[in-house]
Image 1: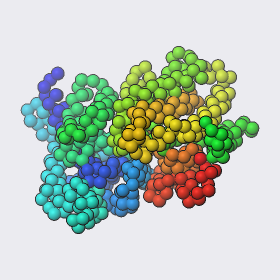
Image 2: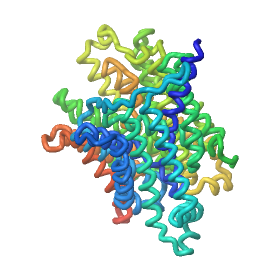
Image 3: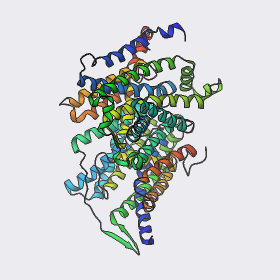
Image 4: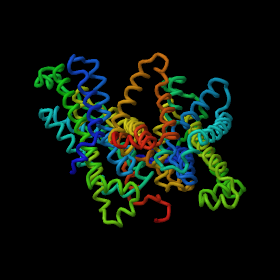
Length: 287
Length: 324
C-alpha cells in the first residue's frame, strides 16, 4: 500500500472525525448536565445541514457566515424543545425523556420530509484543496476542522471562565445543591440543552459543506454521535472530541483493509463492547 | 394457579378483543379486511412481548425489532435453502431469537436505564449492518422466496389465509402468556425488579437469571411472527427486517395502551395501527402522518404516562376488577 494513500485516508478521517466529535459533544453535554439522551439530535443536525444549504444556494450567503445563523437558530430551537417537551418530564423515569425527544424527532422529520422531500442535496461549495507532500486535503474539510476547534475552545471558555458556565457545571454536578445556592436550575438546563442542539446544528452545517445529504441523513450521524459519546464516556466533552478522532481514523483506515460495508459492523460491535466493558468510556474513570 | 386468576374478567375481555379482531375477516373471506387485521395482530404480538420486558421488568429496549428480523431471516433462509415446511421454519425462527436473547441477556441486562436503551440500539444496528453484508443471507438484497414454495400450501392465496390463521393463534397465545406470566411467581419477581432492583436482589430474587428469562420470553413470539410476516411478504431485506422505527412504534403502542398491563398493549396496538391507517389514507394528513404521530406521542408522554388502561385504572378504581 502506498504511504501517501494511507496518510490521506487517515488525515481525511481525522478531519471528519472532529466534526462528528462536536455533534457528539452536544449529545454528551446534554447527558452530562441533565441525564437525557437526546433522540432528536440527528433531526437537529439535518436542520443544520438544510440551514446552510438553503442560505447558501437560496440567498448566496457564505456557508461559514450561514453557520453562525444556523448556530443561533440551533440554540433557540433547543431551548424551545426543552420548554415544550422536556421540562415536564425532566424528573420522570428516563423512558419519558427518550420518548419525548423521539417525538420531537418524528415531528421535525415529518415536517422536513413534507416540506423539503427526501431528494439528496449538495451545496456544491468548494474551497479547492491543499497538498502537503503526498497528502492532498480538501479545503472545506480543513476549514470544518478549524471551525470545530474554535467552537470547542469557545465551549471550554464558556464552561470554565464564565459565571453562567460555572452554573452549568454546578447543575451537572449536583442539581439540588446548585438550587440551594440560588442557581436558577431550570433556566440553566434549558440553556444547556440549547447549547447541545447548537453543537448538533453546527456539525450538521459543516457536514453539508462537504457531503451530500437529505432530511433523513441526521439519523446516521446521530448514531455516530452515540458511538463517539460512548467511546469518550458519556458526559465528557473532551472525550467526545477524542472519540470523534478515533471514529474518524477508523472510518478513514478500515476501508483500506476490508469492504466498506463491514465498517459500520465493526463500529457498532465496538460500541456494544465498550458499553459492556467500560461504560464510563475509554477516557473516563473506572466506576 | 388459583381459580380467581383464571376467571378474572380482564383476561376474557382481552382475549375477546383479540378474537374479535382475528375473526372479523374470516366469515366473509374478505382479503382487504384480513390485511387490516393482520397488521393489528402482528402489532399486538410485538407490543405484548416487549411489554414483558418493558412493562413488567422495567427495561426499555429500543432493539425489540431485532428478534422479529432475525427470526424472519432464519425462517426464510430455511424455507428457501432447505425447503423446510412453514411450521418448522416458524419454530426455528422463534428458537433462533430465543437463543440470541439468551446469549445477549447476561451481558447487556447488567446495564441499567438509558445505558441499556443505548446498547439495544447498538445491537439492532450491529445485527442489521452484519446481515446487510452477510452473503448467505443475500447481503443487501436479502432473500426472496421462489413462487413454487407457496404451491405446497395450495397456492399463494391459500397460503396467505394459512399464515393469517397462525397469526391469530399466536396473538391469542401472546395474551395468555402475558396474563399468566403476570400472575405467576416469575411475573411477581419481574415486577419487583421493576420497582427496585437492588431490593429485589436483597430479598433473594436471582435478578440476572430472572431478567435473562424475561428477555428470552419476550424474544420468542416476535421471532416466530417475523417468519410468518416475511413468508407472506415473499422476501426479506435488512432495511425492512431491522428498522429501528418499528421498535419505537412498538414502544409507542405500549405507552398508548398502558405499560405493565395485559389489555394495554392490545388496545395500544389496535389504536395505533388504526390511527396510522387512517392518517396514511386521509388526504389531509397523508404527508404529515409522522408529525401527527409525533405530537400524539409527546402528549401521551407528557400528560398520561400511564397510558389509556393505566389511566382508567387509576381514575376509576372499580375498573381494576375488569381491566387486567
